[in-house]
Amino acid sequence: MPGTRLDPIDRKILAELQADGRMTNVELAKRVGISAPPCLRRVRTLEEAGFIRGYHADVDARELGFEVQVFAMVGLVSQAEADLSIFEERCRNWSLVRECHMLNGEVDFILKCVAPDLSTFQRFLTEDLLKSENVASVKTSLVIRGAKDDPGVPFDVMEERLNRDA
Amino acid sequence: MPGTRLDPIDRKILAELQADGRMTNVELAKRVGISAPPCLRRVRTLEEAGFIRGYHADVDARELGFEVQVFAMVGLVSQAEADLSIFEERCRNWSLVRECHMLNGEVDFILKCVAPDLSTFQRFLTEDLLKSENVASVKTSLVIRGAKDDPGVPFDVMEERLNRDA
DNA sequence: CGTGAAACCGTCGCCCC
DNA sequence: GGGGCGACGGTTTCACG
Image: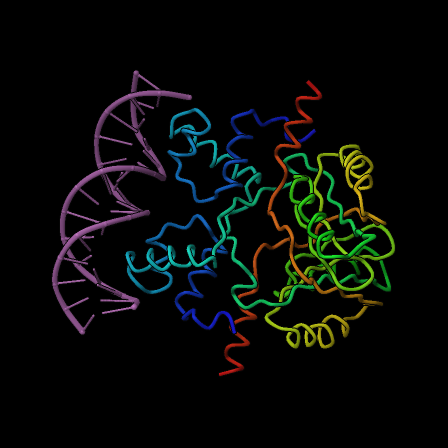
């Protein structure tokens, strides 16, 4: 079971840095109840072990002029591993596609796209996505309004499960 | 048009902080070509104006033991504004629901859920989501594997459009 | 927006348990 | 193994030009 190698202090560090990634190390150390040097060593270890992938400013897309968010459901002709990989790699190269997840069920992939306006998205849809080899079908849904958009994971659910198992 | 009040330096600041939210202010200042004090003033202004909503460590869900990611498509019985708001507020209180977007088309909402294991998710699905008033239907799709998961917005697409308009 | 100065922080070596 | 203390260099963040 992953996550077992982390002690409660590590989990607290991760939760705090997920909530505020620009917190100073001394502030973080105070919150998790140890002094600054060991706290910084733990953070570096968590980064190197891949638990922390990076730090990002959370920018307001709409405020910045990205008015269009779209979820695109993509079906492929061939689901052979090589063809899946090719499609995934293509998505990684489209900066307008922010997320690409392979799903079970009727559809093969869900894409979350962000664009400044509808015409920019339509151009991507017709000239890039739909013209891609192996793409059989694309169904798009515009985001009318966002109700919640929290990055990261629910640490409280994790703690609940750890308490339940204990 | 939003985004017009930002000059090229502000946009560069946002792009840099989106790429690395823990960059020091002096490093940021160097990259955008001004000295540290005005750079910090710009960052504070961008924060207070809401362009920057916060900073978050990007944690690896799977490495941390969150093995299950699910997209849930939710249809409601009533789409009256009051009923939509009630549903959105409920989603905000479910920590396992990380995103909730209202969509056009057949379905009313798409939810992105993160859970440590399938049974935790199933419990949420049957005991919380499906028992909610006004929920007519829920279709879930498990994420088989993630191919791309970049937070934020595509600044390069924005710059392209600005150049095109100019 | 830049300069300078003061306070603070990140970071290291060392000692302790 | 991990945590704490002290000190140096770099950073944040003022006031001022």
